[in-house]
Each structure stands twice: as C-alpha cells, then as structure tokens.
Image 1 (tube, rainbow, N blue to C red):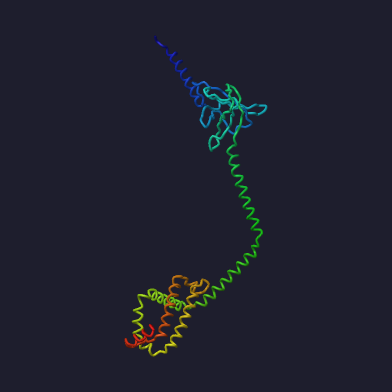
Image 2 (cartoon, rainbow, N blue to C red):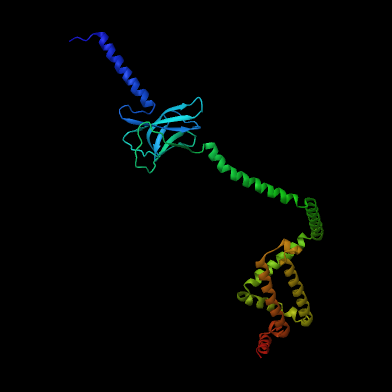
Length: 315
C-alpha cells in the first residue's frame, strides 16, 4: 500500500500540533495525561500572582494556577488552581496566597480543613493572603526605626540639658593648669638630665649590688678590710651620723620616685626598683649600726683586733 505525500504531510502536521499542545500545557504547568480538578478563590488583590505559579501543599508542588479573572463591576479577582484529582482536599480548606521566595514571587498554598466532605471540581475555597515582602520588611524595620529615634531623642535631650559651655570652660582651665604644672616641671628638670641619670645609675648599682647581699658579704668584708686604715682615722660617730642622714635622704628620694604624682616618680616608676632599694637601705642601716657599735670588727688592723671585735659582738 502506497501512502501519498499529502497523507504523510498531514500526519506530520498532526504530530507537530500535538507536540506543540503538549509543550504549551507543560510550560503552563499542566499535565494533560493526568486528570485534575479546578478550584477557585476570590481575592481583593493578588500581589503579583500570575498563571502557572505553583500550588503547594505542605511546601510541595501539587499543581499550578490555571486562571486569574477580574470582575469588571466589583474588581474582585477570581483565582483558579488545578490540582490532581487523586489528592482529596477537604471542602472547608483555605486557599492562601504566600511568598514563594525572597524576591517576592507568589504561590498558592492549600491549607487543609477538618471537614470530612471532599471538595469537588469547581468548588470555591476560603481565600487568604500573606503580607507582601515590602510589608514584612516594614514590619521588621518599623520597631527598629522607632527604637533608633527614641535613642536619638534621649541623646538630644541629655545633650540639651548639659551646660556645654561651662563644661568646655572647666576643661580649658584644667588643661591650662596641667600645662602650667608641666612648664614648672620642665624648668625644674631643665639642665639636670645628667644629675638625674647619675642618681638613677647609682641607685641601680646599689640595688644590683645589694640584690645578692648574702653571697657577696665576703666581698664587702674584704673591701672594708682594705679601707680599715683610712676608716681608723675618721670619727665613727660623726661618720655614722652623716651616713644615717644620707640614708634618710636617700629613703625620701626613693619614696618620691615611687609616687606617681612626684616629679621623679613620673620619670621613673618601677616597683621592683623600689623594693630592691628599700631592702638595700635596710641592710645598709643594719650594717652601719653594726659598724658604729663594733668598729673593731671592721677597722682592726690585725686579725687579733678583728677577732676581739667579733667577741664583743657575741657577748
């Protein structure tokens, strides 16, 4: 059997039309091979809902929006949705327009009711609608804006109630007083850098020397033995008095150095230095008292004289 060219062309055109129809319905979200029911809901506004937008049940797509029609008299919008007839939807269910994503696209969500009666093709559901993206964002930002305005208002009230001119005047006087104090301190210390450096070096040497006092006592005794002849010619009472005076002045200097408000204290504020110096002064006072009381222990020229001094101390 020979098929004419016209018949072949006709068959191909019919197949093409069928494919086009299937593709068109597929693009609209409709499945022509599955039986479905159409349900409706009436809205005053639909916030950008269009045909082919998804229909969801518990977040799962079960159909699509089939139609959107507006009444010319009431301007009421009737939205139709197509859902597979295999899904049994209670008659008192809700058809709610919701936000489908963060950019504002819409979808229709069917919220099941508790009725035992199943909805039929062409039934109307109760229509509801979520807030739009703009309204939701506005609902979040409005309390924040109010809080910011309240804080700014409180700050403005607090600033308005403060005597800024008086505060600035007091601050200026305080800075001027501080500058005068600094100028006086600079004049006091001007040209005395070398003296202060020598004092600090001497104090550092003293503290470092007396830091290990116990292991170095033999060295001190040897030095004292070398200078015994010179010390034997000095009036020990006068020497002891002068050394005590020097010790007291050095102690005062040490206190001044360790005070934060003092001049030297502002230059050198080192607690470890103070502790070492205080300990050294105590050891020095003890040594001087021992020298004053038992001079022969240190000034004896011969070993016998020094032993005699030791025996006097032991008594």
